[in-house]
Image 1 (cartoon, rainbow, N blue to C red):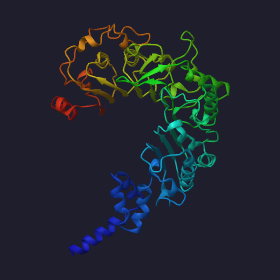
Image 2 (image 1 turned 90 degrees about the vertical axis):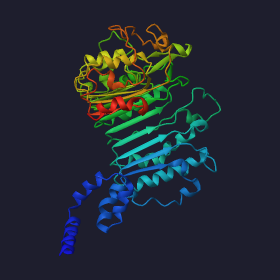
Image 3 (image 1 turned 180 degrees about the vertical axis):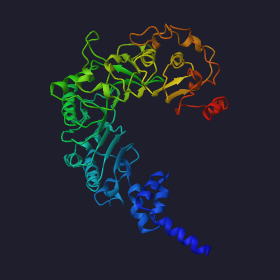
Length: 467
């Protein structure tokens, strides 16, 4: 009898509707478990194969060019919905990378795309540093682009081009590789478009981008970031300002001139070169409103790190100041991501930015950085998520003299009143974390991302983290 009961229980368990099993499969952690389930029986194979093969990542630089034409496509490729291509270091490849290989790589990706009838997301991440940046030309292959544009189910497209080096100016290099961009005209079903590290003639890029965006009426997420010259010699990356600091404003005006309707975006991400300001601060016009329905934004990520002019001493770097007047009327913002929590950002959050519930600060802070006091003065009543990168560094006796309010290297553009309200507080040894800085000790946080030195912080922070 017990054996019969167990058998009946097993049969009853296996007879659950496929919808229930799919929900169970979505909670499974790790592809190994899903793969094991597909081998249990034919029913499980049909249920879990789509989940196992939903996301596919290919590191293209690991593929042998000679094998690409005959290479069999992976099993389950027809179930792929999220497709990601990585181009990393070709240096270890034998034989070495040659631009003539682009044809084979592009046609292999094209074959993959044609075998994915349900693809929803395509991501291209190019982190190669080949001479001339020729791998970026793969994306311009006509058949690859045509196939991508014919994917009617494609909703999300993300491309990160390879970044040029600051001193790359060899006139003998192929002229084509001097512009990292592709013609995306013809895509009309996208809900998300993210393009980073692109470069080329600014006027041409603005016209092309405006033309593409005009054909994306249901777009909800837009991310843009240019390749921009930088000085990476310091702890924090410093952008070296050129004449092109008005690309974003110019794009908004170009979009308006092409009769484009403002996009009902929910998420806007602005990286390098997308300087968030307007050329005439006295003007009451908002150029961003030509491109985006500002009042509907829920998530806003913006770069506001260190900048300097080419002729300046590296020690004279300044912090870029965000022009928050461009967000006037936006009361729906829930998530803000900035490079640094400057006094200007903090004052905006404590005033018009009170709706923010999730805050990300992406730059690395050392415990000696006096601008950490801006966390002490943060007044966000609904803050539920915080992400920071505060790191513990070697103790120094002279740290209080290293960064002073008068130090030009710590001066923000048009902002000289940092921490003028109260005297700057000196950190107590090296055990302080952002939880000690927040006014309520982070008691309302439901999510926290931070850097913890277990030896220095764990004993003091453990009660808070698990309270």
